[in-house]
Amino acid sequence: MLDEAWSKFAQHISDLGRALPNPPFPQSQRDTTDGYRYLTRLMVVGLQWAVEFGDPDFPAFYRHDDDVTKWGGPNVDNSYLRARVDARNDYRISGTKGTAYGFLISECEGDMQLEQYGVYDEIWDDQLTTDDDGFFELLVSIERPAGYNGNWLRLHPNAGNITVRAYYNDWAREATPPTVRIERIGGEGLSPPPLSPAEMERRIDEASDWIVKSFHYWNRYVDNAYRRVGPNVLIPPGAAQGGAKDIAYGFGFFRLADDEAFVIEGEPPHAWFWNVMLYNLGWMESLDFANRITSLNGHQLQVDDDGRYRIVIAHRDAGVANWLDTTGLHEGMIATRYIRTSTVPPQSAKLVKLEQVRDVLPPSTPSMTEDQRRAQIAVRQAHVATCFRH
Image (cartoon, rainbow, N blue to C red):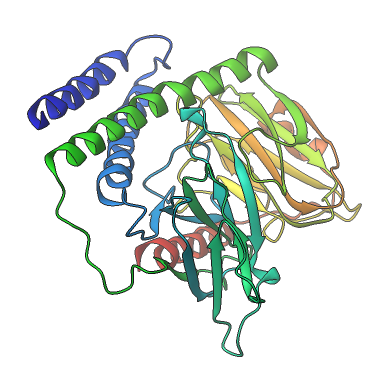
């Protein structure tokens, strides 16, 4: 019954809210506040994905993992779209690149927190044939039609969604996401039937399941890794279960007193794209990346004269170009991504006093004034406003 499904949904949300201020979730006032905000964000994503975008016969791309709906460790240099698919159907995806650096179309089973790890097939934008205006069409089907020579992606029998992951490298120039559409072939001009009570009940149950599992899974995911690795340690990049095939992930954790800094050093990879960014411990959410410097990619990072980069993670502005702002979190997660890379260089790191940062950096490491920092943040604010708010 619909009312029972809704009551069960409300009870699950209430249970999560009561659990939040207690272990195993972080206990600081900041963490608890962020946790309640995170729960509201999960509700937005779970309900929209299950209820409004739950029909693979009438699919549409849904934006998620943006600056306000964060879950599952998103890359802040990405915008994400996804749509439902069913292997009984054939689909057409069409559109243009926008001003993005590039994009990847992935065919996925589902979500890691639902134990749906499959990433079955992928195609990059530079592998697509386009017309003179950059417009493309991509057929997604179990089998390639006889005589068809256009863009094609094989649809796996277990595929549940298609994800479009757009990349942005130069935030001052790359901000307009791809404009893409998905349609079921044979469904053009048809209308979906009104939701039946049974189908609405199923979608409410799906939303509830997604929210509850997301809430617990990502907390355990980070907590288990933190217990295994410990603070102020970096793990070198490698493949990750449930991640895209062309991405190498590295991670680590910082724990900083007010007067400390964590300095990361490495050689830039020979990669199409790479970045380093911060997450919170409780939920693996990206930090505020519009109004603070909580991530740096290969275009944004300054490389020293010796060909190596240094990144300073600290609570206060370290006065150097490659500063990552903890936003006041004394503990957090560090993630490194190498995309389409031919090298996987390691990173090293050291814990120092903030006042000693300059002593461990080369003399050529550029400084950054307050005005320059404000200009740096202004570029980020404009990028996010264009990418996610238009």
